[in-house]
Image 1 (cartoon, rainbow, N blue to C red):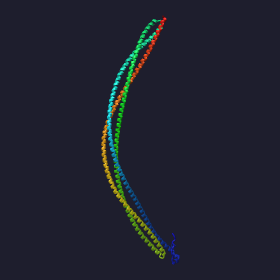
Image 2 (cartoon, rainbow, N blue to C red; image 1 turned 60 degrees about the vertical axis):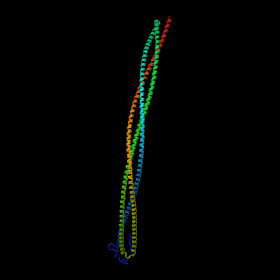
Image 3 (tube, helix red, strand yellow; image 1 turned 90 degrees about the vertical axis):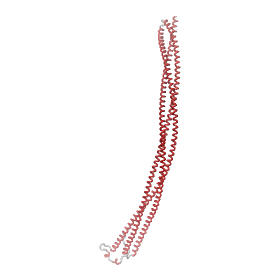
Image 4 (cartoon, one colour; image 1 turned 135 degrees about the horizontal axis):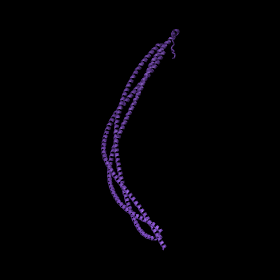
Length: 579
């Protein structure tokens, strides 16, 4: 601290006093200084009290500012809540518009579905016409199949007749070939015997050739026998010619039989071609039947698909209706939530009003405290003035300076405090007026919008429910009628399809049996043709063997004839030599 120096000099009486009288005997400090120190301590205590009071006022001002900040924050929060509520109301309006658009879209889809139902009914009529056409074509096919069946039976009869003729011809040819083969075998055996005899004669002739000179008489006799053998050879040649003629006749018969076989084979090929054509026609009929089955299956699948699509569309409409109901319930719940929020906002407004009233009361209390503080300050100032007057009666300048400073400080404090109070009052009034106006406008808007929304929602809900109920009733009636018609048509078509399937199965079984019979007959004919061809080959082989044997016999005969000529020539030479 700075040293306190008195502004005025002490009186001369006190200055002339001895220091022992001025100073305390115990502490050695001057009495005047002690007095001044005590006075200063009292002033300091008073100033500390004032400072404490001023510190309390600052803390109160800070509290009031904090309350004002909290109130401003609450006010901003209420503003944000109001903005969010307005946005929610806008969203609700947008959702209502979107729901109206969805409802219009559902109405359009219902009209489109009705149009599709009419198209499907037309398609069902077209399919029924096609079914009648298919029935007519099926009847034609059945008549054609009966005609083909008759032709196949006639062809079978012809083939059977030809087969019987062929069997009779085969038996006759076989008997003729047997007889001819037996005759040929007997003649071959005779020729073999003759050949054996000729060979024996050759041996004998050789033996006789050795004994020619001795047995000329026997040679003459042998020459006679050779002449007889010549006659026999001539007879054999005639027989061989007859046999050749018979062989030629047999060859001619075989050629005739081969021609007949070729004709029969050509006829069989023709019949086979006819059978193939008939089988191809039967396959075509089966294909047409399969096509009809496939088209009937496709028709059934289309009808089932259409029914499924209609059922799916019904379920979709029902789901849309349910979703609309759910959305209506959600909107009702949202409206209730909005009402609750509005009630909460009103409650919050009431709370803010109560807080404002509390702030007003606190301002009034602060004013009262300020007045009390002013009164206490005035009292303390008066006390200080009295103390200063008592202490400084002689110091006029000191008193004037202190009073001027105190008045300045008082005026400054009062001006600052009044300015702050006025500013605080004006700000509080402005904020309260603005909040009141905003809240009143928002509440009126909310009330008007709520009333309009309730009216619109009630009208929309009633109109939508009525339209949906009517449309659902109409759709249910139409669906019921279409289901009844479709069930009747499906039952009739199923019966017709079952009848057609039974007829097709019967025709297929008949065709399979006839085809199996034709295949068995053709296989039998093939086997018989193979047997006949084998028999012909055997006959041809036997014929070739007979021709070879005949040629060998001719060669042997010519050899024997040449040997006889040689023998005659030798005999003649022997005779000439003998003569």
